[in-house]
Image 1 (cartoon, rainbow, N blue to C red):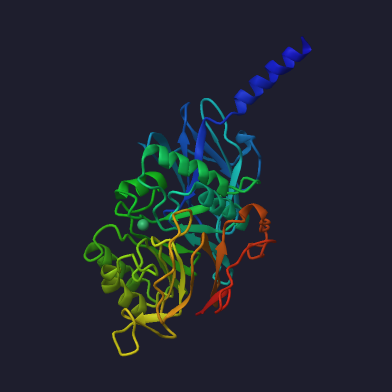
Image 2 (cartoon, helix red, strand yellow):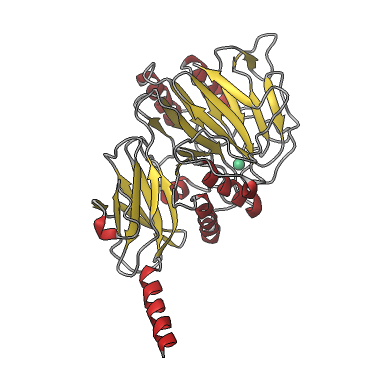
Length: 410
Ligand SMILES: [Fe+2]
């Protein structure tokens, strides 16, 4: 009898704690120093509320100082996607939260806003192309949970064709990016050619522009991050906006970086040249001092020397090395089929072919970029929460002939 009572008690207790929400993700519409979007799938139940604050009350939801209801929900990919857009957050601060609804309570999650002071350093992960190979994708996701970045630039081609079951699997796999202590990391999402339309990215990641091109400042004036869309017209509205935004922000931020899906000059021979983006953006990036560009799509590995557009005698495919030029890195490898690195140029710094993403440290003097091989994620140690730049044990940093660290000085 005692045992039966115990079992009943446990069942009631676990039912009370069971999540009626899943597929959690954090995304960004604005500065991660003072804003965050908390997103999830509402499985059942209603009236979800995010209870949050800067003190960790674990799952004791009533003790959290603040609460917020979804600003947007959209039925999409056979999920009920909810988005709570938090504003007026304090920079460089841990925020703890739970999601409570009529039926249950989520685990307690948390995130950290980025520092405001430009003198502080931040850590980013940049990559993309996670379709097709679930093992590689999960390893890369697990690696995120270990490296604890301030944000993740994700350059498109999340799934093969964006079918509901593919998005659901992708979001289930994304749960591996959550650290065991419940810490989550926000995505800055771009669209790839495997996203059939802009709505996919808008409805899964709540990005701030319906055409999926936008810019996000990080910190007070540390950097402005441009997300561009190679899957719609590049000339016209998109580039007009980019030109205007770069001009408005000229000299306001220490760094300008860009991410988009299709490379200007893919390092895979079978891939078509990105002449449209070359024509519209390469000169603009050089003129407006965009120091780093992250490209995807080709599923190979490259980093270039700083380059600028040129058709002069020493140029190759429209670029020459130039000390004040733009560094281009990429190209995908978050679980998409790897392709041979068979199209290097005279201005290519290093190239390879393996599953990887970039790990980037940014402060007001320099950017340091490492290429992280992700296959051994299970063996890699955790970066401590209080030391985001610690190199954990067993981390497999790519070490090509020109050095493991790409350093870009201001
Ligand atoms: Fe692609």
